[in-house]
Length: 271
Image: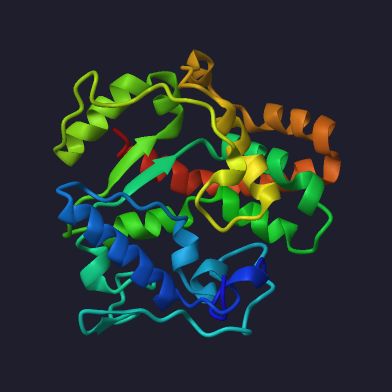
């Protein structure tokens, strides 16, 4: 969230940190994990790895930060960002294509409703909110990464709704795709409740509470068989209007409808 940050929600606490700084921290952490004989796992939203010009392409609500920053630059083993046309991220090809991306998808209506539920009270009146909603709901950037791996190591797509319905079966399928041991007893499905404020990230306390609060207070995975029910966006819109008003519901319906094409495309490849 430093000087190269591509969207308007910058963080003063990290205003001097560059993409290269953060990349070096991640790379060193991954090397330490590998030195211990384990496989590293890193998580990030794809749009945070892309320039604002890519994020704004075909966007109904483009980033207000357009033109204020240069695309982020990272160097790795003599290679730099943006050296090929197939890689949509700022990660150098040698790094990105040595990984196995795991893309998790959910129905855009569920994604956006959850996001608005967590953020509306704090950010709903801000001018940037439509941009943030569109960024949260779309799988456009996940699809771009998926398509960039054609001819490279395959991406793995996980259906988040299917994962919540039958976590054990989905985790076995994921472990098989990764070539790791997914037998019963090797994966932890229960845990002790913790404090969301102690999570090791740089999000604000409000974001930690909104997005990590339920997870932190939980003690395990509760399968939700109701997620198998089909979603009718028009019906969901009625509920959104009751909770957040007609204007926001109309915008949510528009964003979700636009997000469906990329979601359906990726869904056909899901485990």
